[in-house]
Structure formats: structure tokens, C-alpha cells
Amino acid sequence: MKAAIYYSPKKIKVEDVPLPKIKPGEVLLKVRACGLCGTDISKIIERRVPPGTVLGHEVAGDIIKMGTPGRKKMGTVPLWTVPNFFKIGDRVTVLHHIPCFKCRFCRHGNFSSCPQFKKTNIYPGGFSEYVRIPSLNVRFGMQKLGSLSYEEGALVEGAGCSLRAFKRANFQKGDSVVIIGMGPVGLLHLLMAKAFGASKIIACDINDYRLKKAKELGADMAIKPAQACPCADLALVSVGVPEAIENAAKYVRSGGTVLVFAECSDKARVTISPNLIYHEMSLIGSYSSTPAEQKTCLNFIKSGKLPVKKLITHRLKLSEISKAVRLSRDGGKTLKIIIVFDKL
Ligand SMILES: [Zn+2]
Ligand SMILES: [Zn+2]
Image 1 (tube, rainbow, N blue to C red):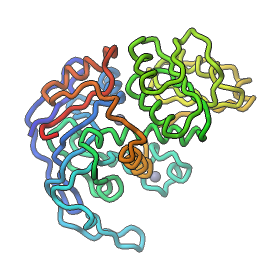
Image 2: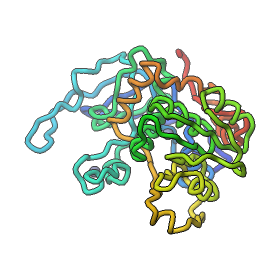
Image 3: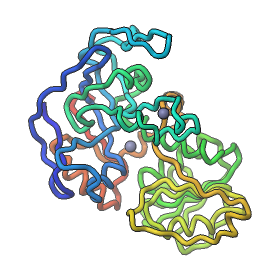
Image 4: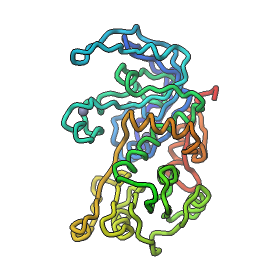
């Protein structure tokens, strides 16, 4: 099978690799669509993964093979590792990381810090014709697409991350939000804010095209970083720039929340008055999502509440992966890129 192998920021090659073998409880998925995520780009640019890695985690596809259903024990309760719920030919989307729900990180809701969360992953990666889905991911992270298209299915994972951010910020119906950075992720937050019933959505970016897009998708106001901004309940930073976090602290009301939703360079530092925090401003972050958030988002998308399809600007083939990375890095008029594998 073909897979896109990362070697260096400028070298990603599509090569032949062996088809993954599956064990009892696992599933072999024929990938039909895989989204290119901002985290894939930062892993490439910042060289955060070793050469030889296959990136991509926003997958949707068809079940083409299932391992024999084995019985596995979890505590005293025997569980079927492949529930009868799935069958060959099912169109599904799957979450790539599954937390254990019982360690100290999980007990405090920091699921992405759970050791199991980091270990469970689809293999070799979504930018590949086929992926192996480990049994834990099958049990807890796989969902039938139903009426959704493959590309909508590929957008469920990212939507789950956005939903988690709003939940962590305790965002309530009627709250106002300023979103800084209107790339594909910022625009996804905008759609999520609407789904949550935000009273006012302020979009902030330096790029006119993206501000225009934000207006089209329902932003009440579009501003540039230097412009004045009415104080919001929540400032969501979806761009990996430290100054944007400092600005966000100026954009929230007293006691409001600044939520960091983008990775900066490891050397980045921010300067914020401690008195803002003393006056109960919350400075928090949100990373990744959980099976529960994924389920909610799948239903949001099905119900039409979250029209994620509007964010797609490019559908490219696996052989065009380098072009996809280039387009995404350059920003401009590129929003969400989906790598498609025939039969959409
Ligand atoms: Zn992602
Ligand atoms: Zn855990």
C-alpha cells in the first residue's frame, strides 16, 4: 500500500509500505479521507516527529477486515473487543487516542496527559491507504458515519477538540467570544460558538480574506489585532503567536477566560499582568478531545448545527501531500485541506 512518509520539513515522500497486520479485536480501515491538521503542520515544521513517521489522524473510511472478536477482561467485567456493532463495509470515523479514564490525569480531566492516551494510535497514520485500528480505539473511539460523507467524518476529530475548548472555558449560551486567528481552526471555533448560542462573536486576524470568511460564516465583528475590541467573556487564541495571548488578556472582561488553543514555539514567552489573574481572569489551555466529545460532534454535524463542510477549500490526493503542506503553511486563501482517497 502507499503511505506518505515524513523525512524533513521539505521532504515527504509517498512510498510503498507493508499492509498493517491486525490482531484479535482490531480493525483494518481503508482510508477514504484524512484531514490535514495544524498539529501535523507544526510537527513537520518544528521537526517534532522522527523521520519515517506517517502523519495524519483525522480519518474516515471503510472497515475492510476485522480481527476475530476476542474476550478481554477489564477489571472483573469481560468485554468484547470487537463489538458485534460493527461489520465489514461499515463507513466509520475513529479517534486516534483513547484515555484510560482511571489514572490521576484522567481523574482530573487531563485526558491528553494520560499515558495510555499517548500510546494508543492508529497505524501507521492517516496519510496512508489503510490503517490498523487498535482494539481500544475500536471499542471507544469508532463511530458509524450514517448520513455523513467521508470528508465530514474526517472533520469530526477536529470538531471534538473545539467542543472541548468551549467546555473547558465553561462557555454558556449568550456568552460573547473573541477568536484570535481565523485559520481553519479559528473558523471551526466560530461555528462551534454559534452552535453554543454565543451572543456575540468577534473575529480577529491580520488576513482580510479570512476576516471576510469569518463574516460570511456568521461573525458579528471582524477586527485586526491593533483595533479596539469590546470585552468578551472568552478569548480563544487559535494562532501560535505569543503576542496573540497577550492581546487576548486585553480582550476579555474582568474575570473572563483566555484559552490557548495553538502550539507556540518552545522558546516563546508571554508577559501578562498577574493582577488580571488576581482579579479572577482564567488563563487555560485545551488540547485534543475525548470519545464523548467526538460523539457529540458527530451528532452536531448530522443535525446541521455544525456545517464543517464549509471550511474545506482543497481536496487533494495522497500524491499531492507536499503541495497540501505547502498550501497550508502559506495560509492565505487556504482553509481546511482534506486528502481524499477515491470513491467520495
Ligand atoms: Zn487534528
Ligand atoms: Zn488515564
